[in-house]
Image 1 (cartoon, helix red, strand yellow):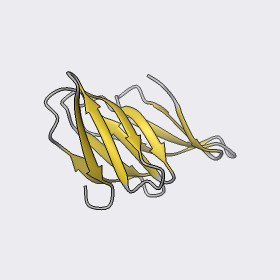
Image 2: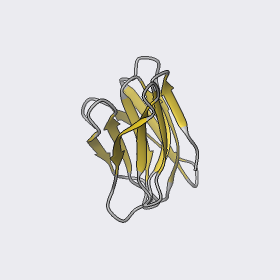
Image 3: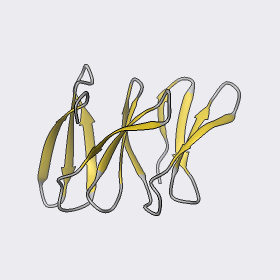
Image 4: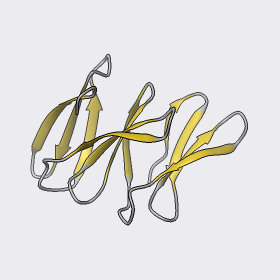
Length: 110
């Protein structure tokens, strides 16, 4: 599992239960844990206060890193989402799954 470092004050790492832990760097404390029940969450990409994660069931999620809330559940891939990229202003998100499937999402509306 990788670690994301989206801002100088935030690190995101994996948790033993399959969730993601969002850390406050200056204090070294845990802000909160992002969880999706029984599914292991894989962090893919962060942009400003947004994080996109994926589970092995082809679903991606957009999280608000300031609140720890899931803002959008992105369904539609047939396989595990393995790649995600935001456009420059964060208004669009491209997700990719095997074999060569790609989807474009509006980050405001999902």
